[in-house]
Length: 129
Image (cartoon, rainbow, N blue to C red; front, side, top):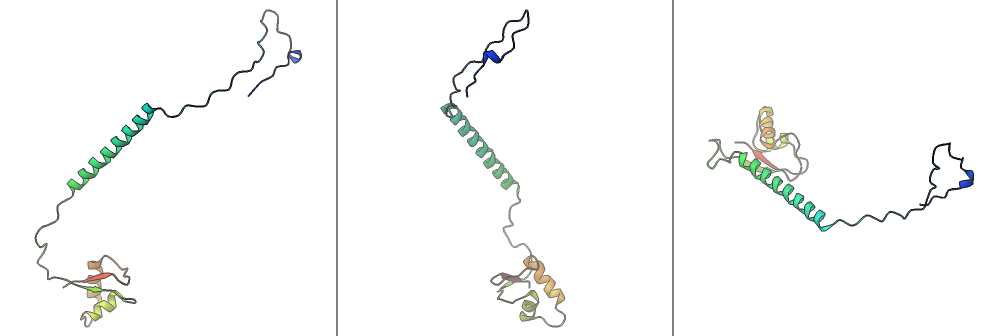
């Protein structure tokens, strides 16, 4: 960018004050240098430190989780598994697995054992014993 001064348009300086310097052309600012090797090494060191902290945090969280039981968790009879087909509901599975009379308690047990009310074809439905 350049500036041009027109001295004939300027007002004369006030008495006792020196004349203001005229504008002058200056060289353009050179473009910024690329990232130096020192900056690159610093960035790599910070990345390694962040990954190290994340790994240690992950390991610490994993160590705080309780271990899974080795033996049988309860004396409940083993459960069977049915694969849900198209159009199957917990109610129809309760009827198909030998339910008679009022099936509401059996349907509630099926839903509790399988984590909710959604059922899609191909889902493995645990039938509590």
